[in-house]
Image (cartoon, rainbow, N blue to C red):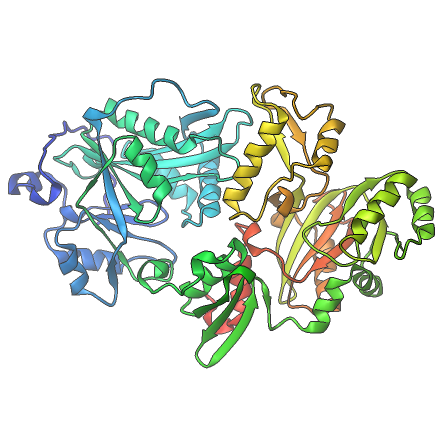
Length: 579
């Protein structure tokens, strides 16, 4: 039975006894067999069930793609023993904040404004944050319907500088949910945007939720946290939470596989681009052997078949296709033959700059890049003079003796991911920028933003503190020690490469069919099963485009919410495809 209580008022009866020892009279006061739908899954309140068989039946009705949680079951070891092939005890801790002991913070957390959700659009933004944190998303309509009852509380955190939603938390009032005689409440789904959230966002969300329940006269606030989430545990202890002997039980479904199945050695040492593939493979029952964690190399096996991968590069990509992507001059020729427009270009190898100078004179501005290379190394954008051309060519030659000079085409930097010759994702990549807070100089803003990028990408993305950064900042009218006003955005890099702190915005639904067709035509011409194709487009919604380069190992972790990782594993092991 699913019950969502609405406006019923009940005076809580605080008790110092743990929930397992509720008296028979107290249990009679509670509603029976209470299951709440939180859209990403259901909360099964174990203490409201008269017998364990009822909990097993409730968990067996879990829908595909959801994550149900049974909290507060009596005798959880016996519960799992009733269905050992289906259930497991979650490796998490339950922490409790006794609300009568809670003390508000002396001063507000700067830069963050926490509020109640006000629209369905807020729920969609919450889902975006869930996706970025690898959490199960929920139906926004169900979440909005929940919020319209007092049983649920959905909070979001806004960045005061930009107004963007950068964090969320959900609260459940146990008194309104099942007439809890202990007068409790619980906290779920605390999540923040790792890159953009100001420091203290998580703490602000927890505090506001706790204070809401203090205002309602609730006795405690419980939460469940993974045993190895040391950062979250440290925050909860700082706020006064303490552990209580309550356990959670879940179903052995594909989403929960990492929690009950053995983890291969080296998995934690993989970079985010390889690890996200390993996690998806494990969820599907594919065996993962990490052969070289530093290189991102793994051997995936299912049945009698194995595939060696390095991030999104696999044995399915031929050496010929790789060589076509590796040399940008070769890629240009292939695209021209395939009818895909490329920018005008000239070679500048062995110190011969004559053709490059002619191109510069005709175009006014050019881009200089190594003919072979990756991650934006050695690329100079916006070269406008003969002296700058010589310096840019010398820089590029440090990475490859063959240098390519191309006309500078105005437009957005668009990455299109094509897997098995189908467009799976498209995203606009933008150069790194910082947002002024009215207090910090540009140098501090760059360092703080770079640290957030590093944390969010496992060290894969950072903003270099070099002359190029200072030059770009100067073009915006600032010096590195200037203090920009609150909300002022300042670009700090010219290129949109993610490894130098660039950001990415999903535009898959806006991709023009002509650009999508050009991307598929390009992938077929190269003969590559997985590729990231870079275009410059004057308008994301329009048909105009210029091809820049092809990447044989695109970072699939950068394109949520699009199913890039799922389609990659589909390619490797089509028998595991979810129908």
